[in-house]
Amino acid sequence: MSCVAGFALALAGCGSSSNCKEACDKLASCNLNSSGFSCDASCGTPDSTCAQCLNGTSCADITAGHCDASCAEATFTPN
Image (tube, rainbow, N blue to C red):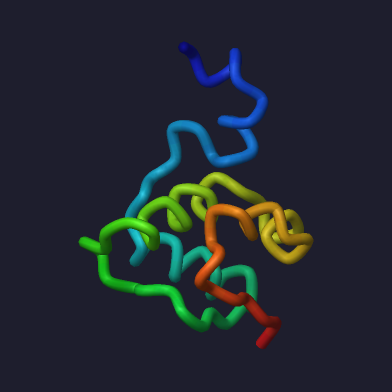
């Protein structure tokens, strides 16, 4: 199944990196703090699932809660 074929996959950042360090860098670039989320580059599930969503989602959409389902254990707040 291709990325274009699944709208839900597109929302979850289809093809995006699941690297938590990259996700933390993205959050910093969005001026967001995280709580309950690992910034370890070799993080495991569920943080890696959350990271995949964050890395494939715009800052505005992260703030709007588009990754809430993937990041159930994490909270993101403006700096």
